[in-house]
Length: 455
Image: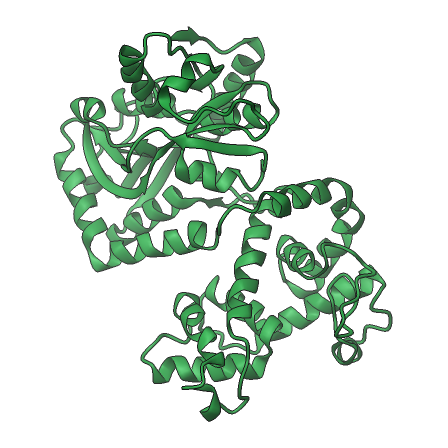
């Protein structure tokens, strides 16, 4: 195993990043907060890692991410404010925690015996496997640990991956790897660009990033299932127990479920061809229409990245698209709908995008205002696809079946029943291919995650 420091470029970027964090927080990352427990001050200081599976800022510069949502839900249940310290790597997050600079580390940390010796183990938030990830065109592709002896393999320093490889190197004497102070997401990018051959990453990180980097290929699982979870400083048993108790409560389990639904459930089996095409079109097609999506957002309030995802699902951003049923344009509007929306030329992308945005906004507005987002938005998308009448039928059916008609999680179970002969004969609007809006919403959400980076 070779230990590499950051080169001068990465070191400069890292230092700039940390300076920005310090300026934003107004605190030294390592200044101890352990004499100010949240039970007394009402402020929970959390260190996290910037990444798609932990914490990041959306295009409105609002905090989001799986770990962010869970921590905020915990804090809300206790009436605490949250003070965030954001660092680029797992190693840095653990250093902050060890120095007493945070009450809690929520940074995509694998629960391991070696970490349990240094910190108090918090509750588990997700199960993952460590995966060896290489470029799709690599030949030969490694298929087992001993094949890594011939691979240019890089992993994040002081990570669970480095620990696993260190143990394997005792069995396979020629297994060598580079341990570097670079984030897992950055290493995946280096694999995608063929700067390095392979890396190791948690399956949830691969699952999300593979959509942005379709040339990433999972060669094999390096481990069995492992738990990701929180860690706290030694001596913070009481807070660890409080966090675990909350996570195991109905409220905590609901927060876990919502996190899974929001960030992972809509990601289906990896489609290399589709996602490769999407990423190419983000570069060569989206710039032509981006302004129209932003203008439509200003007029209707419907997010521009969502409208772009909807348009991609409908036409792959082809303003001259025509289906066999007669729908046309970048938003694939029917002639009747276009007339209703005041769209004179369905093949004019500016008119079509604004018309589609108006139609989606109307679907959204006609739903009860007390339905919380994002459920209301997903229901509006389903209505856009299957029609308002069929959505109303599905909502009535959901209530009859004891389901929550305001919950997209429940509604995506009920909508397919619109094609079930046990139910549709008694519905006002009759038969519908109810699986289609479920598939439609899932694909739009998946596309939006990828397209959002362009806005």
